[in-house]
Image (cartoon, rainbow, N blue to C red):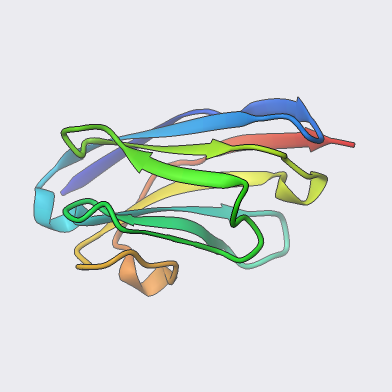
Amino acid sequence: QVRLVESGGGSVQAGGSLSVSCAASGVRYWRNCMGWFRQTPGKEREGVAGIDIGRSSTLYADSVKGRFTISQDSAGDTVFLQMNSLKPEDAAMYYCAAGPCTTAHLGRPAYFYWGQGTQVTVSS
């Protein structure tokens, strides 16, 4: 069993920055990789960034490359998403996810556990 607790998020003007965090607990195998997804009403949940906890390799959606950074703490128990140069289209509910994959992933099937989400609002 894995528990994921997100924090951070909030509201910011376009061009600003926000960060979100995800505190993970539970069996390490089931959180070998972790990721951030986002979803807006009526749309599919999309992968934003993923990280392989063991190797610290990362993967980003094209829409956020160069603006978002995913990282982890030294224990691999907390994953961060630093979001810079935010755009109105980045506004969404952001979800943390964990799975047993051995490389960073952006695909939903790779993830077995999900947090409850934290809202990010970007005003133009």
